[in-house]
Structures are given as C-alpha cells and as structure tokens.
Length: 208
Image (cartoon, rainbow, N blue to C red; front, side):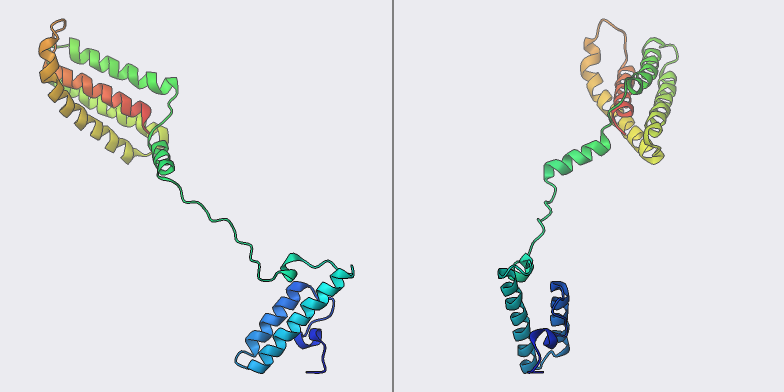
C-alpha cells in the first residue's frame, strides 16, 4: 500500500469529487478503527490529496471549493428564535377575539335589543317573562357563536359563562343604580337581565 499514490490509498480516482474523497476517507476510518498505523496512513493520504488539489488550483487547473480549503469551517444554520411573550399573547387573543362584520354585530344586537325591551316594558308577566327572555337570549348567543366556527361546545360554554357573569354582576350593580334611576320604572331583576343581554351580545359578536 506504501507504493500507491494518495488517491489509490483512499480507493478513489484522481478526478473524484470532494464528496467522494470525503466519503472514502470516512469509510476507511470506520473500517480500520483501532489500527493506529492504518488510520495515520489514511489521514496522510487525505492531506496529500488536499495539498494536490490546492496546487492544481494555484496552477489554474481546477477550482477548489471552500469546504476543501477549509474543511473545519462549519456553516451553522441561524438559530430559530423562540416566540416572545408578546407574540404568544397576540396569538392567543387572535384565537379568541373575532373581527365581526357589521351584520355579525347588528343581527344579534337587534335580537338582544328586542329581548331587553320586552324585559323592561312588559312588566305584567313578572319574573316568568324575564326567565323566558333569558332562555331565548342564551339560545341566540349559542346560535351566533356556533355559526362562526361550528364549535358547539365552545359556544355553549362561552354563552353560559356570560349568563352567569351577567346575572351576578347585574345583581350587584342593580342595588346601587336602580334606586337612583327615577326616570324609569325598573326592578333589580329587570336591570340584571338587561345587563346580561348586553354581555351576551358582546360575547356573540366579538368572540369566536
């Protein structure tokens, strides 16, 4: 093997590409792993080929790629940046908040406005009318939310959450505002119902 030229020692032709030379060297290093003398001979042959290619380049016979002249230079891909908290927050909001069309706002708004008017001005029915209006309001909210993306369970959850928050908040606020609203005759239950309708309208219009 000592009489062979560097190309023959690696088992490649003199016009072999750099990739072929590199593969041959790696294959031989793996094949003779543990044989120090043979490994040294392989590396010497590889270095001799590199020097021969550089000489040929200086003579203008070939163009040596950068990876032959600088095999230790590794091109590292730029690290992928992790999304910031602000970007994650914006993505979460985009999944929750909708950009409704005027129709998406006005149509449920008209329904809830009508239910609010019935709740305030039709006092003869008492609390039964309010309960019926709330049931209709929940159904309307579920319908319009489900119509956007077809997620019925999500629509039910958001609507019921709006109902609970609206009734609780309305009950607390009614005790403060209703006694001062002398310009209109409204009970605490009516005020709470109207406030709930406003919240359900916001949810069905601006959430998805």
